[in-house]
Amino acid sequence: MWRYFGRKLFVYALTFFVAVTINWMIPRFMPGDPVRSMLARASVGNAEALEAMRAYYSSLFGLDLPVWQQYLNFWGSLLRGDLGTSVWLFPTPVSEVILGAVPYTLGLLVPAILLSWIAGNKFGAFAARGRWLDNTVLPVGYLLTATPYMWLGILLAWSLGIVAGIFPTAGAYGFALQPSLSWAFVSSLVLHWFLPFLSLFLVAFGGWAIGMRNMIIYELEADYSSYLEALGAPRRLVRRYAFRNALLPQLTGLALQLGTIVAGALLTEIVFSYPGLGNLILEALNNRDFFLLQGAFLFIVLGVLIANFVIDVVYVLVDPRVRVQMQGGAA
Image 1 (spheres, rainbow, N blue to C red):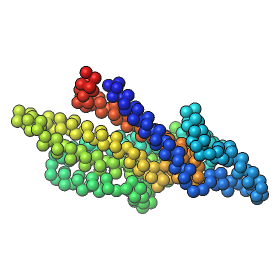
Image 2: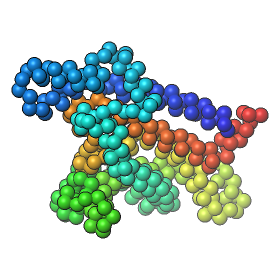
Image 3: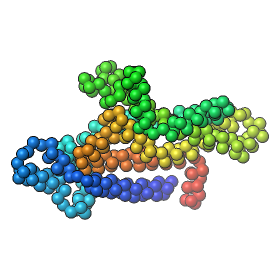
Image 4: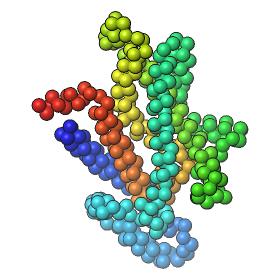
């Protein structure tokens, strides 16, 4: 087992290195100069003074160095835990800006991923029991899973926010409130959270329901199901075994879909002006903030890789065939 996880960790470390390198390159191939964007907000009328400030800040951020040296400096700073200073919110450190946005993104992603996976699998298994349920769930599931996250978010904001006036459509809490443990703040936080969460939940729910429905039908037609029925096993017991076996491909699907769900969450945050990493990336792009983009991408890559590794561990625990195969390889 240690050898198995050792190989997994090596693959994840290599993936992390390549992904972070690409994420470092992306901002530097974008048009525009971050220092000029920062100085454009300053009221400096003297051209010589403006040029002197540009040279000073370029040197301060290390942008006057050759690209290869900037790359080495980036990895050196990263190994020390230094993500640099934000150009847009100068002189605030990038790590401080990102840590302020990460709780909002996790507050959307974790419940949406877990609840949609659990509810979708349960509902898909339930739908496979009868034709009328199947005929209802299947088209609804296909409709939901084919809906773009951003479009569904706009639709929910228009219908439940603007037309019905039930939920707010922007921000994480009321603009007149300050973060606290008061009932007014917590209720406002939940109301602002609900629509972004619902848009992520519904799209993912449709996909998991269809996947589980298909897997249950496949498992019920397998040889072991026919053998159990021939032995006189109750239908409920056969379905229980089919559900447990169908969960394994769904776990693999969860690992494969994490990147898509994270991307959907970032777009959803932009639609609702939710102050998570998605909204932060948009502001960093608008302000040519290389260092904030690098930091946001780093947290996203790290989060997806950690989540995939956790799923790999869970897969080993729930699938005895993997453990038997590892024991055979070790022998």
